[in-house]
Image 1 (cartoon, rainbow, N blue to C red):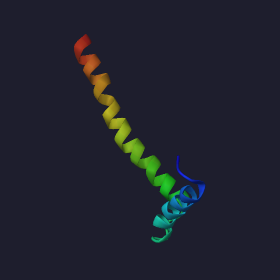
Image 2 (image 1 turned 90 degrees about the vertical axis):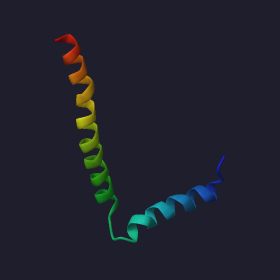
Image 3 (image 1 turned 120 degrees about the vertical axis):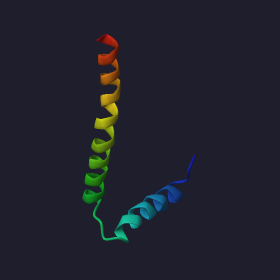
Image 4 (image 1 turned 90 degrees about the horizontal axis):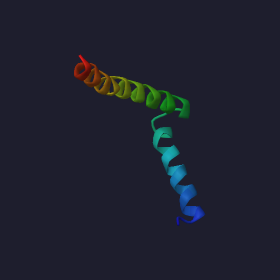
Length: 56
């Protein structure tokens, strides 16, 4: 198990990563949401197209 002091310093280091570039947490979360959408939507069409092709 990770000691609490190391866990907190790791979280601070993570926050400092995008604070260094002047990016807010909201901007990081928004970029992550767009990345998920852009990756998830095209990849999830593959199973649907495969099922439609098998059923046709």
